[in-house]
Every structure is written in structure tokens, then in C-alpha cells.
Length: 453
Image (cartoon, rainbow, N blue to C red; front, side, top):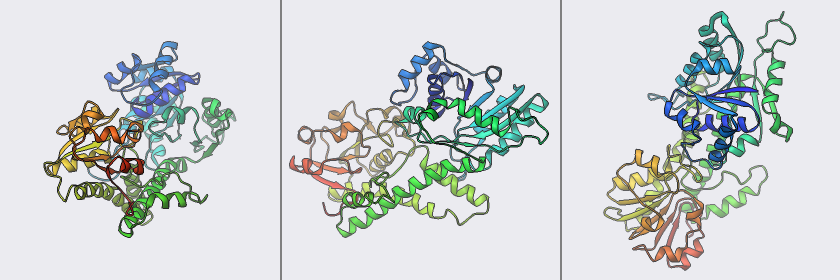
């Protein structure tokens, strides 16, 4: 099939490349000339394992190309994925949907005939109906549109696999076909379902569940999933606070909880909490949209979820200070990690950087190191010292904090690390280290949520 993907940031570029690798002809569209030129040259402007090789392969095969011209996209394809960002609004917790609306406006101006707009961006419920009005308003009588919703469920660091082999495909369709239209109307619900089945024929053939629902339900699926995951993380971190005061071990407690099949062990890793460009802003936007709809009290618990999450960052700063005798001023402190999670260079709302920045404001001499995310970190926190490698970061440190659980930090040799630091003080903000091995190497080790250690 011929597909266009509007917006070639993290979501859009990943989706476009993966669709091309599945055998479709794809055109990626973006208003950012630099993004378009980089993608056309086979360069991925962010870190995502496996995507650079897949982009180079599909560009070389001619199955994907990129443009800034919406007219070119409208002439090339009649199925258009909307993959632009929905950041938090500047003056509220609500999602800023301006980029989504602008993308549909720019496309609709050039459309003739029948077109399917497939939203993948995370939007407030009701957006698809609004966009359908926008599309018809700008196209006039030259085109017909069906706006359907196909939420994304990507995990940064696993996005390629999550696109090619998703754990579910959800599609929201509202059938507005006129009663007197023919049964084979290309914009009827049945025809749209068949079109989506053709697009995702490979994963569906592999057994991926395919769920068809109305657009409102589809729009709510992603934010509901993120709200649930955020709640699960904040729950175990709230329990961690109790463990710290009761002298209990939240890691062993979470292990026991995870053995209950009703609960499961995923997202029960107590520590610094969540960050990134999705969970924090999505739970806030979900609360805001519920209020707009009149369901003011339905999601008030998410405020506490957000508060617990932010509180864990403060706790790590406090714990480092306690380990240093009550003050971090003029102490050399190493923070291992900048990205909000491993296998990503995303520093949006990064707990690791929040900790590093707070320590610096308190007068500490902070050095940070991350395998992939220091470029973005430097733009947000230019006053921090960014080390060339782990040894450089550790050299002369009075205390070390692990804030992002990269494999190379987990596998770090405590004996070798001990040879270059000034004091062997380790604060494990992710509960990812072998504390026994570090203590055996002469380190004082402290962890979030493990009051008995």
C-alpha cells in the first residue's frame, strides 16, 4: 500500500520505517527541513536500537522517501498516519493538540477523492471527531475523509520490535457512511477495517490480537495504559517510603508481590520513578480532559501518583546528602545516567538529570555520564560537567549515584571503580546493583526503599 506518515520525530520515523520494512511504499512528511534531510540521508537523529540499520535499508531499497511538501503526500497516498507530538500546554496540564490540528489542516488543503486519516498521536478523547470537521472544512467538496484512531504502544529502546511485533493492534472507527451509500464504499466501517487489516497483515498473520472499537475508546486506551503503569510505579515507590522507615526491603517485597498472577512483576521496580515524554504529561493531560468532560473526581488519584513520583527524586538527593554527613556543598558527586531510562537518549523529564541538577544547585561539584543521552542533557543542564567516560566521571568522586540502569553501570567492576574514586560511597537509585559485591569491595551502599540494608 501507499502510506504517508506525517511527523517524523521519534514515533513517526519509527512507524514510517517499520511500515516500509513490511512492504509498503511510504512517504514521510515533516515541516522541519533538517529532519527530512537527515532521514533522506539514512540518519536517525535520536538513539533507538536497530532503527538506523532499518532506515538505511529501506532508503536504499526505495521503499521510503521524505518531503516537506504536503501536496506531494496527498497526491502519493490516500492513507495518512498522524504522528506529531502532543506536548503539555504551556499554561495548563492539558495536552497541546495544535500540531495535530495543523497537520490535518495542511494535508486536507491538498486532498481530492477519498482519504483515510489514521491518528497515532496520544490525544484527548474526542479529538478524532474534531479532526474530521477540520479536514472537511479545509478540503471543501474536493475530498471525503474518514478519521480513525490507531494508538501507539511503543516502549523507548524497544520501538522497532514493538511496531513490527506489537502485543495488540487497536483501531477506533465510527461509521458515518450515508444510509444510501453502496456496500463497497471505501470509507464504510467494513472497508476501513479491511484496509487496516491489509496494512498490518504481517503482525496480524503472526497472531497479534486485533481489536476494533469506536474512536473514543481507542483514544482512551493509550492514556489509560500509561496512567495504569504510572500508578503501579508510584504504588511500589509509596511502599518503598514505608520500607525506608520500617527497616524493610522493597525489592524483596516487590518480588513477593510479583508472584501473584493478579499483579505481576512488571513495573514494580522501586527507585527513582518514571520520566520521559509520555507518562508524566499523559497522566496530567488525562486528568485535565476528565475535568473538561465533567468527570472531575474520576482521576484525582493521579495527582498523588505524580506527587509520589517527584518525591523520589528529592529522596535520592537527601540520601546522598546523608551519606556525605549532611551536606553536599563542595563535594564531588558522580551521577551515572542522564536518560530517563536505559537504551534511550531521551532526557525529557529525566529523574537522573533532576537529581544531578538539584545537587548542583546545592553547591555540589557534579559530574555525569551516560552512554547515549549527554547531547540532549547538555542543552537542558549546560552547567553540569559531562565526563568523557565512566572512569573520568568516577575520578575523585566523594559519592556516586546510579540514576539510569544502563547495563554498563550494572556490570561495573566495584573493585576497579573503587580505585579511582575519593570515597567509596554508592547510592543505588534504581536498585539494580549487586549490593553484596559492592560491599565486599569496600563500598558503603545505600538504596531507595531498602531500609534494612
